[in-house]
Length: 127
Image (cartoon, rainbow, N blue to C red; front, top):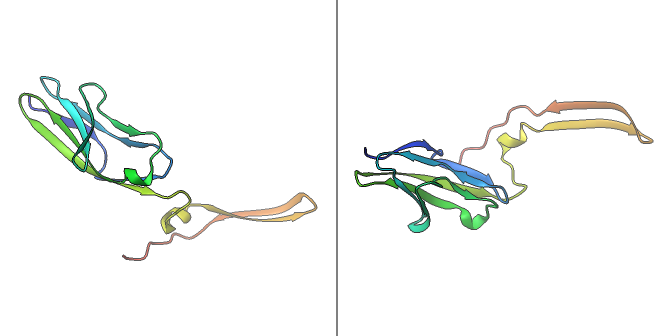
């Protein structure tokens, strides 16, 4: 049976620098397909068993186009994913709109009143 990719990552993945990058590529077929991961043509991983690709501490240099390919004697199937690495501390407007804003009145180490609210939904300016 020709290989198929049963579970995969989205076409675009964004990770904050220092966090784990986890790319899915679970393949099925008979005989069991060999799964390879490449980044811009360079072989990163090749296995029959460990088919997902993990970078535990993503860095800026890990950004780019990754390709998962599943092959057996019957056929080959592949997909690509574009990985973006965001610097630590950088947030988009849409992410900021989900953070709570706290305003507290403190007098001599006693909190008298706290107001916690969310910013209204903001939209990214068109690029």
